[in-house]
Image (cartoon, rainbow, N blue to C red):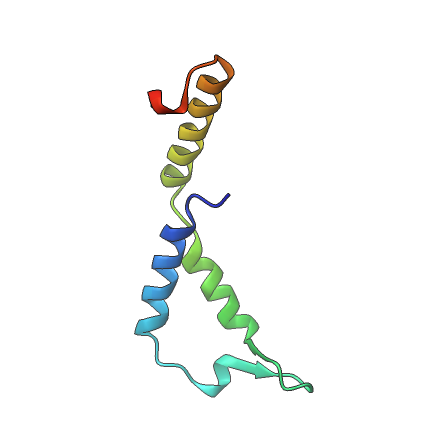
Length: 78
């Protein structure tokens, strides 16, 4: 389950669309497989980091849901 995946995807795709790509941004191995250059990979990871408060809010939502389910309440009572 990846509840924040759409948020991360939007951030990454928006950033990707604004970039001007160069051949040096990618590495081609002996088998012809194209990969993101390690330095660019670190940038992508940094762009995917969400603020702590966004992550904490999602965690709290799931903790609350699990507590309600543990108490026999329905999910619909959110």
